[in-house]
Amino acid sequence: MTIPAEGDIVQIHSYKHNGQIHRVWQETMVLKSTPKILIGANERTLVTESDGRTWLTREPSITYFHTELWFNIICMLREDGVYYYCNMSSPFVFDHNAIKYIDYDLDVKIFPDMSYTLLDEDEYEQHKQEMNYPPVIDSILKANVNKLINWIQQRRGPFAPDFIEAWTNRYEFYKQIKQQEE
Image 1 (tube, one colour):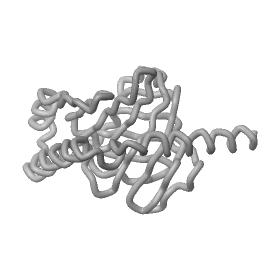
Image 2 (spheres, helix red, strand yellow; image 1 turned 45 degrees about the vertical axis):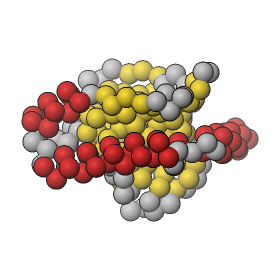
Image 3 (cartoon, one colour; image 1 turned 30 degrees about the horizontal axis):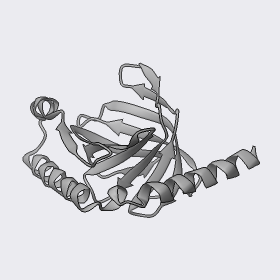
C-alpha cells in the first residue's frame, strides 16, 4: 500500500459491507503517515452522503486511522472540549488518494469528561442481517469495541492527554506552510 506524504490533502471514503459508498469527506490534511497509522485533520470540509446530500463539518477535527484496528477515531475540537466519535470499521487502506474503510454501523461517542455511549446497535443488527455479515466479522467487531473502551479508560492513543495538543499544533504548522505556498 502506498502512503500519502505529510501535508498532502486526501479524501476519506466510507463504504458499507455490501460495497456501496456511504460517505465522502472531500479534504483531509495528512499530519502523519506510516505503513500502519494515518493521522489527519480537517475543518469545514464538504461531506457527501450516499443519497447525494451534502453538508460542511462544523469544527476542526483530528482523525486517526490504523491498518490493524477495527475502528477509527474522529476528535472534534469544540469550544467546550474535545468530543470523540469512533466508527467501528474495517482497518483502513489508502487507495487513489483516499483513505478507505467499511463502516460497520456501531459507533462510540465520547464526551470531554471521557464518559461514553455505544450508539446504533439496532442499525448494526439490522445491517448484519440485511448484508449478511459473517460471524467472524461480528466477533472481531465486538472484540474491538472492548479494545476501544479499554483505550478510552486507559487514555491511550487519541485519548491520551497530549494527543490533541500535539496534532493540533502540527495541523496549524502545515496550514501555515500551505498558505505561504499559495
